[in-house]
Image (cartoon, rainbow, N blue to C red):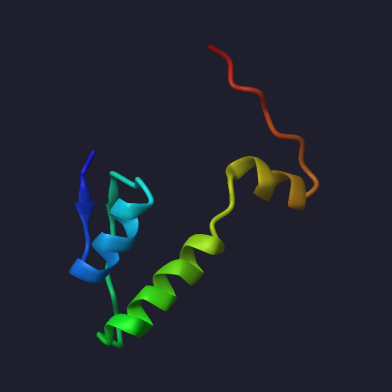
Length: 65
């Protein structure tokens, strides 16, 4: 993987959550409080592929292996 490529504030949040491979870019505010709030907000909005398929009315396909 790429490792954690992020600014110091975002890096701290992601590493504390155990995220090891991610590339980020902050556009706009560099205020650490705003960056942390935006990071947490973005992480809360993440959805799995299965969840997105269910919301679209599709059946998730089982992985074959």
